[in-house]
Amino acid sequence: MEETILQPPEIVNPYNLGSRNSKDYALVNDLSLGKLLGSVPFSSSTRFLAEQVIMNLDSDSETVNYRQDALEELVKNSKLRKTVKEVISGMKYVQGKLRNLYSSDLASGLDLLRTYRDFMQNLSYLENVQSEAISNANNYLKQVKASGRFYKMCEFIDKIEGLGGVDFRVTLDESGSPLNMSALELVEKEDKPRKSFFEKIFGNKQIDESQEGNLRNNWGLNDLGKIIKNYLNEEFTSVIREYVPQIKEITKLIEPLEFYSGFSDYFAQLREKGFDISRPTLLPQEERRMSVENARNPLLMESRNNGHKVVPNGIDYNGDKNVFVITGPNNGGKTTYVKTVGLVQLMAQSGLFVPAKSAEVSFTDGIYTHFIAPDDITKGEGRYRNELRRMKEIFERATPYSLIILDEPCGGTSYEEGQRQSLVLLDGFHKLGSATYFTTHMHPLTREVDNGRYPAGRNFQVECIDEGEKLKYTYRIIPCSSGKSYGEEIAREIGLRPENISEIVSSKAEERGYKKLLR
Image (tube, rainbow, N blue to C red; front, side, top):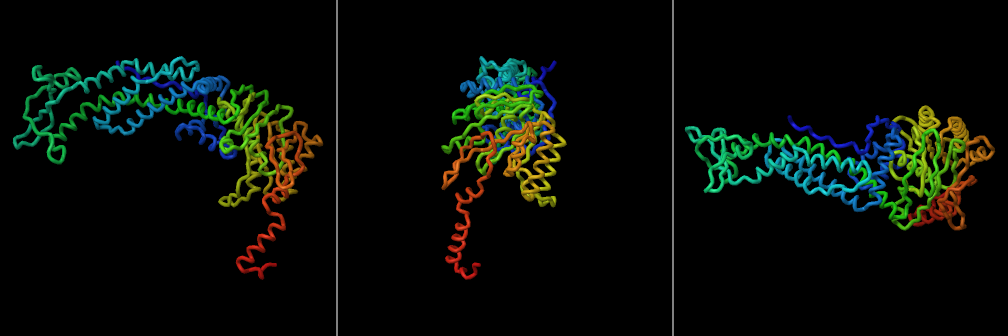
């Protein structure tokens, strides 16, 4: 009976949970998920896998712990990370040979089998591992190597490589033209009897005396040589194809192993850049809370590379206090902070580590975001209509177990109308009970929070200090509202006050000769 092809273990989704992607892909752009995954050192196919894992909100505590165990082991053990990368590199090399395999070409087939054999025989096994994911991968590779199929393949290669010269014999017709090959023989040393080539390989003796012909002319293979080559291909590629399915199964481990290798490298790199990295504790969805100490936005790792300090902030909410109105100046850190909240939730719920000193995070049934988007002229809709349409979508999908992040909504209409509609939205989200982060420059909203309109609401601001000539941004999120957005101070800092504009216009007019046209 033919030996069964061994299937690789599922090491990313071990319990084969049904995929319930959020289907709300707004967060991919709003939270800059693509940029985050672009910073992780893995291939585009693994990046696709990682996005699917992160967007799938069905992960349970067992799946989360399974992934976290593997990441924790790899983050702590640089030697193991190196070994895993060597295994991945070897598999990719085999995969490259597999892609270059021609269905009827003996040479490329033998090259594939030799590459695969050498990879398996020289494999640095992932010994002494504790995590189930890496251990399952290791045991699978050992099982394949110990299989009868792999042993027979190595035996086949050895026989091919052990052959001496081959005495090709074909039958010619009366005119001297070559006919199809009927047999060929192996020529060994002169003092040994001639042994059938097929007997050497398959144990079948097929000998037919015939006339000999030359294999090549001055321009390469002649008709006779082509007949011989085709004959070899037909006889041996069928044997080679027998081993291809198992090789394909082996290479299916590339993306799952690279998923863990890439993320562990990424978290180790964050730690080297001064970011806190921790294994979050996942809480039941019903607890509806998040408690995170010293969280940093991982997208700011490049800023850290440029010598800029990345300020950590806490995240803390529960079912009784979970509606936050955040004010402060542009470029002060409001958007960065709410993105951090969303990324911490996504990463924790996906079984990844988080960029924080410690974290306790409840599972959520959905993350709904809305960040400022340009007008969609293809639909004939302006910014405000798009915003309201998005708000309706969120209300139709969100539950008390959801996380909602809104970055300056209702800014596409007049200040007064936007303020009134913002209150309508806050009323609705407060009634729904979902955790809600709402950044805004509409400061009257904060007075409604202070006046008790929203018992579950709190005001936050990004701290900013006016030092006279310029603003000092601390990027710290602190309790209470800011009271102002520092628009005039920012214009002063950039040099866009009335006197600045007048000077710019007059100077250009003088330089270009149209001063008389000024009003």
